[in-house]
Length: 402
Image 1 (cartoon, one colour):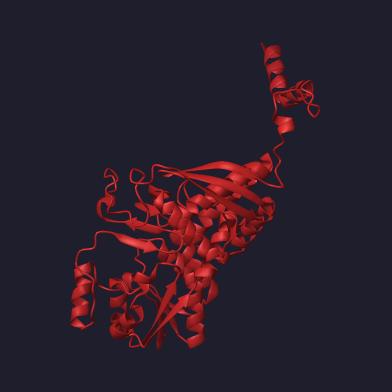
Image 2 (cartoon, one colour):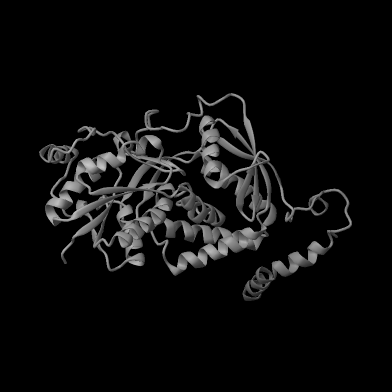
């Protein structure tokens, strides 16, 4: 198949800077750079269009996906309670569906023949991007240079760029590999490759260490309607601005740092550090509200949905019927999640201090140890006898055999 026009997911880093001339050399095609703004910050986006042109791209399209990211992925995922392997709030994997979809849309709009990404052959992202491409535009060819080219080090890429006279600010040494968006920032490499090595403070970029966080706790009130954040401290907030504000407050108090060894989809384990300050606050608040309004069976089912949904998002299966079904379940349950939660932030800890909801199932009249008119303690005897009936019958059988 002859390739005439390729849309490349471009970041302006060393890898994608080298991919532009490599595509032109090896496929003799026009390269269009696509940059997704998912809240990685102004510094990351500064000058990226000119970098792409200097690398040989015919044009560079920067698409703002922040609101789409929050409304269509982050908030719906929060309703399911999805957390991967008990800790990871899915910051990198949640951003991939909106990025991949926007890249496909641009390729179709411009009449491109192929899509290209800079993911390595060892990571999860290659699966996430290519799974989305397959679901959205299976007719487009996918080019993954890291699975094709001969380069095997940063120095070899730098040498190639020098040969092609492509300017770059990258150096031969790169301590950490990072990925940032509105929801989180991830860190891999450097000392983190040794799980016996504690992360140094130079790893962390957003959050203060708990030791350096304020000595006085901060309280923040979050209001939810059907599982979606509507107000912070009584003030209405837009979705993107809300997460930015919670990131700022959480970072000041050392909230949202995790250091995990996770199971990658491709089979290997990897060690990474993640900072998700706003997300950690939101998840704690929603769980606090869930405890108030979900009955036992509903909470158990939501936890099952959360486990399955976390795996689905991590594995890059967003554009599937299963995603639609699980999200429908989480959204349906979240119809009850209306109320207010006061969160206490103190030196890396997030605590639910207060909670209230018009849908609360908690009743002081039922829970009290004082005398009440709504619960006759004698009723418990019959309940326990029926609840333990199977054990009673089994024991009687054993006695008869003996």
